[in-house]
Length: 133
Image 1 (cartoon, rainbow, N blue to C red):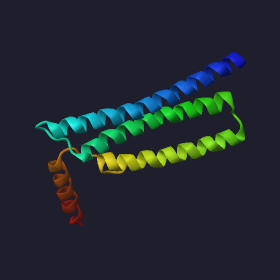
Image 2 (cartoon, one colour):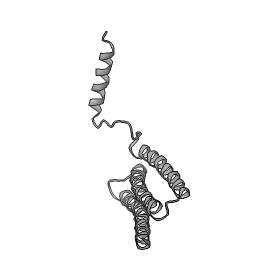
Image 3 (tube, rainbow, N blue to C red):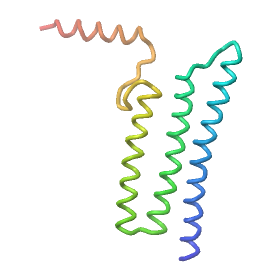
Image 4 (cartoon, rainbow, N blue to C red):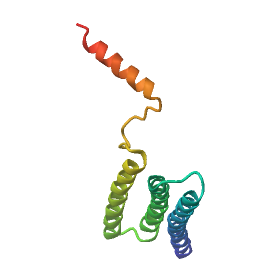
């Protein structure tokens, strides 16, 4: 049983390391693209940098939370550790939602219409249906 817990501790730490690498690597890639865009013809603006870096943070947070879950549930399933995990997951959820708004400009539960014409058509459809008796 101790070998299993040791292995799960290692797996959890591996997930943590991957999460940190994803965040750091995403930041480096976004910064490199920003620098390359400023020097080249197709300038990448700061908004695009924030979107790419925000996406890396969201993905990295997923790995970090997975590592925390593995270590909490398998390695040390105490009530205190589960409570700490719940707070971590709550904070991660709020951060993820805030980053989603920053990246996509909408809340996660809002429907995304990719075609502006379909949105205009839908708005006129709803307006014409409201006039019906």
